[in-house]
Amino acid sequence: MVLDSSALIVCSIVSAIFILSLLKLQRSSNASSLPYPPGPKPLPLLGNVLHLNKSEPWLSYTEWSKKYGEILYVRLLGKDFIILNSEKVARALMGQRSTIYSDRPYMPNTKLCGMEFNTVSLPYGDEWQLHRKLLHHSMRAESTALHYRTYIRKTRHLLVNLLDTPEDFERHFKIYVGSIILSQTYGHETSPVDDPLYGAVEQLTAMLSKALTPVRAVILSTFPIIAHLPPWFPGAGIKRDGVACQKLASEVLNVPFDLVKKNMVEGCAPPSIVSECLSQIDEKAGEQERERLEHAIKSTAATLFLAGSETNSAILHAFVLAMVLYPEVQAKAQAEIDSVIGPSRLPDFKDQLLLPYINAILRELFRWNPVVPLGMPHATSSSDIYDGYFIPKGAYVIPNVWAMSRNTDKYEDVEDFKPERHLTLNDTPALPPPTNDIIFGFGRRICPGRYASEAFLFAAIASILTLFCITRAKDSDGREIPVERKFTSGISVHPVPFPCAFVCRSKDREQFLRTRTIS
Ligand code: HEM
Image 1 (tube, rainbow, N blue to C red):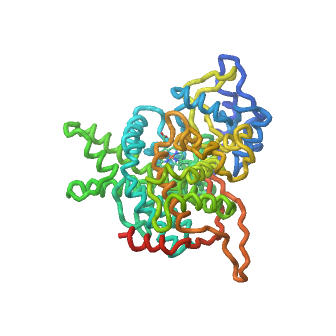
Image 2 (tube, rainbow, N blue to C red):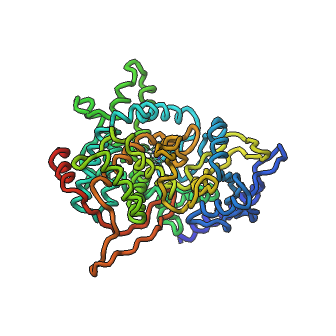
Image 3 (cartoon, rainbow, N blue to C red):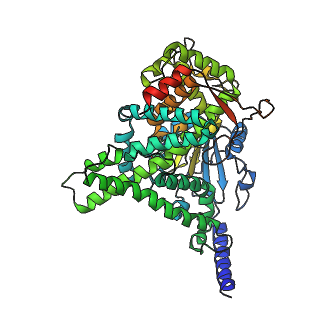
């Protein structure tokens, strides 16, 4: 009986909201009478939802760009979406007009999941600016260079793990990236294997990739009642996931931060981003100001792990796939390494400039299968006019990085993995530097983790190719197991698991690793 009456109330409210949203369906006000950018004709109420490839929307946008051009207007469940299909337009709007294009769309699922603290979702304003100031200080190129020794040390652990249990390579990549970020952010040095903090972060990241999608944001904006349903209510999956995330989010936000504070009081805190930022708070700061700064430090720190772990381990996973599928690229890379490193040591950052082909492999990994194919959505904080088109205030602005990486005017044979395309004729790197790559986003919201990623991805790729040949795995009859280029879908994408073998190339290098570099 209780269930029946609550179901009735919910149904009535949902219907009322549905009708209200129907009435609100006309496009956002456009006093300029200029046209919106072109795009497929939206259906009443649903907009273009039915036209869209739901699991890989970047494919639909790329297909539509062939008909409608570099900038598209799409309507999804009453929301305005502006899709930017070329790097030129993305840089012109998100870069050159960044005062208008640096907001984030309001996504009610962020709050539902207890994630309002995180830098990525903050609206363009004072709090976000404070986060960026802290991030700039700790993640800029010069600060990243101070962590090179840590990156090399962690890379050597990665190599040992790959020698010992090569079949777990995906797990080893996650641990490699996770342990670097935890060490840099909190000075947390325990092995992430079975570490409760690492476990909580990993679980939260996995849950958020399902719970924080723009599609869920649109559903929740259209039917806000879902956030007020009891978690047990049939069909309240979004609410249930939100409640589960909240608990973990609070743990990830508070536990490691409180530990650093405690260690600082006891005088035993290892150097870290958090301890450095905390020690720089002015002693004369009032209680309220101190609280505000501490909250910002705690929030940016928790964001670093959540924002940086999936993307980087997915790139290393894609690297292994590319090496299996393109043995000739691997052979060329190893010839370069052998000529620079010699027979019995492992690479270091001092070798980086001498290894242009390895750097080009990293660049091609960014392009070949962009790990965040639609970047992160920006939002307009006021309306704008571009190229004669009206861009409404509050629109989602989506950089279609996938389409940019498939630009046939810039790249030949776009589906092939060809590092050479990023080198000039004399094998010097083609400009601009990888940290300016479109996969790191645009304008004021550009990824602050780009210098760290570029450095520790280079260290991992160069070291793996120095010690191992990555080949197809064999079945029990000795036949090679075929491998396909297949990726998952989601906000960030990674290869669908595949088997492969890591064959040690040099006993001398293995000995160097086991005896001289791991302590
Ligand atoms: C190859 C690896 C990475 C990729 C592809 C990547 C990609 C991105 C993208 C596309 C954005 C959104 C940019 C925009 O809005 O235009 C972003 C934002 C962000 N990334 Fe990364 N990222 C990577 C690694 C990292 C790492 C290692 C960290 C930190 C340790 C990090 C921290 C952040 C943060 C804090 C933001 C939010 C910036 C803001 O909203 O102002 N990322 N990243």
